[in-house]
Length: 454
Ligand SMILES: Cc1ncc(COP(=O)(O)O)c(C=O)c1O
Image (tube, rainbow, N blue to C red; front, side):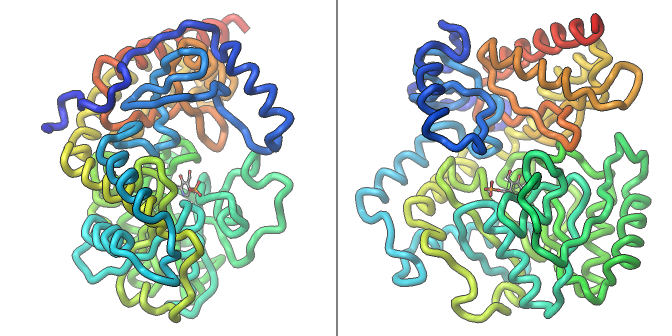
């Protein structure tokens, strides 16, 4: 696999096929059931009900086949129903499904930790621990940093997203929908300005100096246990910091005995054209949080870091009943095998070239596209009012709605709700991806025309 070919995936035909309106009648029946059974607090971006998925295609109960450019929020990097993941899970589930690693151990857990230690940036001695979700990995990173440093303060950034538990809500920047009405939040969390070149116009060095001056003045280096940062922000709008920002923040952490935590939950595992996004700037974090693409859709998360930090915690201080479940570990090993065998890091780099070329060309025709940015197969467009940088969340929502109606799953994000983000499975066939981008192009055209007529 050179990174340029389409990847053979599952038996499901890799084509878009829209046979009803979306959502169709069967999905509408299920929406009615959902409304009286499921909490209104749980949202769904595109309320079609899925019966089968393979590669880059989702098939719904009405027989529609949708192109998936969201990969379940960056989870299905190896594609839906990736053969190695399916095989490994089937094998494991028939043997045993749970012992609780804290009660009796099994090899899969150790093998996943060995792989994480090998794959994460840096050649230093490392240790890992496994969890169920990204938020849990972040919570545990903070526990480790505090235990290892004996300090309490944590610095997170503007536009950050780290999860929905109490501590991770405190770390997350955006109020609606993540934090609104859910406070009070965990204490000793401080916020620093993020490098956001499109909006702050600063170089990486300038943005880092600004952030560091605020941390020094308002938190105090000697009080700070950790700085947590997404190397490319996910939910916050696929914000790629200016070159030099990450290395400068990381260096300040090293100089001040502060633990530098890279939250690679969305960016990690080949997504950005490197195994981890920190590698693009040669940054070696002290701790890395990992989830999403690690296990081809099974709930698994990891925390990997310097051995002296990870081992600073007392025995029994980290864990959880289901953490590192054997079936999830088997899926993780299948996903890692797939990424390595199919060369998905290189493939993400190839998709970057393809997608950027298409989106940049669209940006020349649609002035509502303020910026196209991203790395690998993590690419976004920020929508603005023509001729300004005023966020245009309504245009963004209209684009997503039109794409959904045409059978393409795309996601929005951003502090201002004005960013379309593309996160296709890395195995997606090129013609399918192009077709998805054709639909996106038309969707922007109709939304931009409607906006111009307002
Ligand atoms: C960067 C980042 N951190 C943490 C999380 C939380 O992960 P989870 O939803 O698995 O708890 C996410 C999820 O989107 C994320 O993108």
